[in-house]
Length: 446
View 1: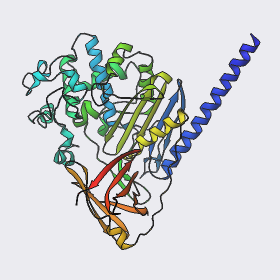
View 2 (view 1 turned 120 degrees about the vertical axis):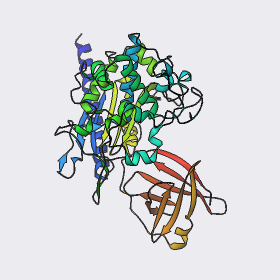
View 3 (view 1 turned 90 degrees about the horizontal axis):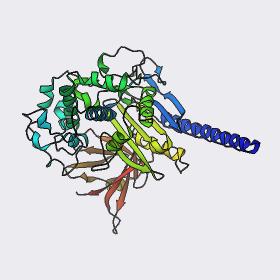
């Protein structure tokens, strides 16, 4: 018995030391990203049911010089979708609706509503036009409250992108319709339904919807740009616009309560979660993206709303939760999440580094000029100006790229790198676009 107790003690000490080492590495990683102005926000990481880290990095309010911490409140953007899908599943369990119901059951006048199911709304396979693709609306109207009718008018009469169920296309409009269906079924506002089914039972006291009117010292300010040279604040999207597709605000602590409730099957049963986590198309279930790590199922969703980029990612088999909430439009959160997973699963990763710009001669710089196709309908024109490249994507603002070495360029304020490729004649024929751990090959077309 004594030997058994000693063995247990040794294992406990080893586990504690491993957890402390993981926490230290994660903190170093996040501090490094923060110093490079590539992460400004709050983070929580847990494994085996133990919180390894829960702290803030950078500014909650740069103007007032107030720092982020574990109490900072952030807009979540599309992380909202998993809460919307959970309420749908709760209502299905109460026999108040079924995911096989047609949209027309709740909105009889909706065009082609008899061919679209709730499940297709949940899985982005409805074909309904995504209202956030309306550039004019997103530029001029997002801070103004809208009625249900005004919001539906943005997409209900648009042609379907495809026949429902045959393809996949991300649709915030589809998730807005889920919120409207919840209101029809419950006869209460969507926000109250989420509170009744999720926030109140879990005591998520720092979570809500109307970020515009939130009066809390812990409320963060969202920034389009936040660095040593410039600060550009972002507008707050009215909750009637982001609604059930993206209106929730929360903290790392509240989101961990949500993650633990899922882990313990206290909000949704195991069978309900298995339904939500079954991918339909494009590795997407009901408000969750599904893939794997170390042979175990990983569940994730990111969120993006002006000034904020977020991610919540889980590996239930190991009780792993990663929550990253940024209030400075940091595109690196996906890469950071992958790096944290590398630390937790003892895989290789690299700390980010400050890239140093060099000067290339004019003939070399001229070789990169031209037009490149990113995807059908989206190109980028590149011109050489002095010692930098000016890249102008279709319909977007120009980006300045600096040379790190021949054929290798980077953007200083974002995690973006371009590696130009050459053909057998040593002519530039395209580039590989790197951003936040992902890459895309783009060919030169002019």
